[in-house]
Length: 435
Image 1 (cartoon, rainbow, N blue to C red):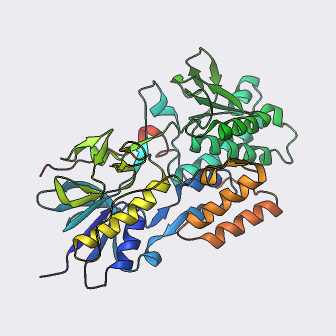
Image 2: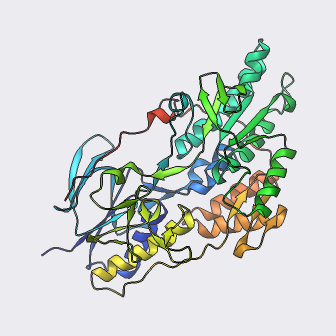
Image 3: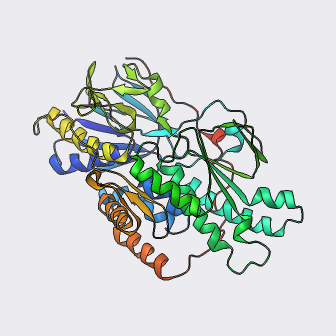
């Protein structure tokens, strides 16, 4: 009899740390480790706004899997169907070829996708922001609009190209506005036909304040920083419709623009929608050991899993990197325990606080729930990211130092085509066969 195979679908925070744990606690002859992921890297999503803002090289947020997971066989592709009864997983690789993988233990860590609302024009005209390609494209697109705005003879076209709308004032949207606005200010160097007064940034959210998930002692200072920089905060407001040249808000305002970025939120990967197990809010229901109750050899962690939070009346834990990382480690230990190595544990974790980098010398943070702003928060934010990143720490630190000491480079590469970054270009929903 061969070694049991552990198949991990997705190598985000949860999947990566699950595999790292398995490689650490299982001897080489105990199990075969296989990962399915469309890329050969683990994406450190929290720093994507800095890639879009030009302060970090795109490679800094991509942690290569093979050097970090030497015992794991990586199947680069997308899981399309999972048969829980037959214990098989069909995968389409990057060249469109299909293969079927058998498994003895399955760990679902497929993560999340952009949450898209039924608003006319959003899917066709809004840009997503969940990948390196989208961050690189957005950086080029924004710089291109600045260039075209300066060249435009029509004042209306000029104003529209110099107007940038971000929908969603959570962590991603707030950081994105802060970082990319700094990029546009750098792009004005040496220009005589465009000034900072011509640039307009608009942040839209239905919530009554920015960063609604944080304490008001942090969201208030963050809002003040953005307003001081000239960001137009449209709170208690949503988008009613979007065209190629205009965003109409629910308060009746029409904003001519060529750029609308959708950062409203995320939902579990569509793979979960067809799984033959119980779900809650679109997430796979698991017990405190992260096992699926009806399928004890199937585990789930991260954004796709409704993990009961013992510190919050057993409601599902928030979809944050902090929880995904720790759940991934526990999933690895419990999978190993199911193979006779170690003891089974249950998930218990209190949030340690959050950090929000607002570019420049500004940030807000609440480490251990102590609110900080300004330079102290900036130091905590960067220290947290350097500790949390699985790799590339020195490279990230060097990029930050370079950005501090030298002027930010403003260059368009045009490497990422627009096709694929619109929300309407999202992949079709895969399916999972019933057991």
